[in-house]
Image 1: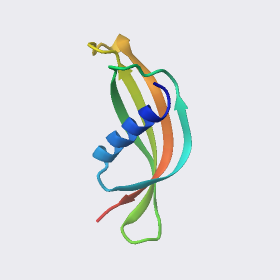
Image 2 (image 1 turned 120 degrees about the vertical axis):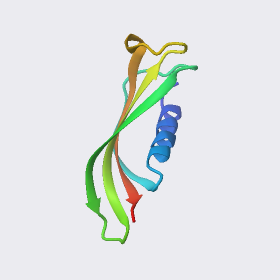
Image 3 (image 1 turned 90 degrees about the vertical axis):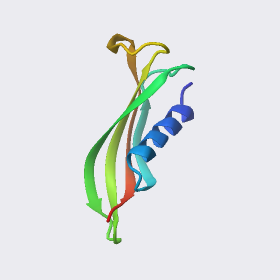
Image 4 (image 1 turned 135 degrees about the horizontal axis):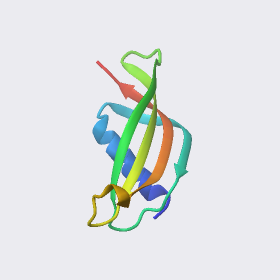
Length: 96
C-alpha cells in the first residue's frame, strides 16, 4: 500500500499527538521511502522544526517533520523495522 493510506494513518497519529492541530496548511515534501504491507504496524516520530506566530491570536504556524516506520506483522525487532514515509509540512496549531 503506497500513498494515501500511509499519509492518512500518519495524519491520524499526528492529530492524536497534537490535539490542538487546526489544519495542515502546506506540504514541503512527502517521500514514500518504502512499501507498507497489510498487517504492518506503523510508528511515527514527529519533530518540530520551527514555530512562527501567525498574527492571529492563539494560532501558530509549526513546521514539522513526521517520519513513519513499519514493523512486519508479528515482529518488533529493530532489524525488521523499515522506514516508509518522510513528510515535511506546516501545520496551524492553536495554543492558550
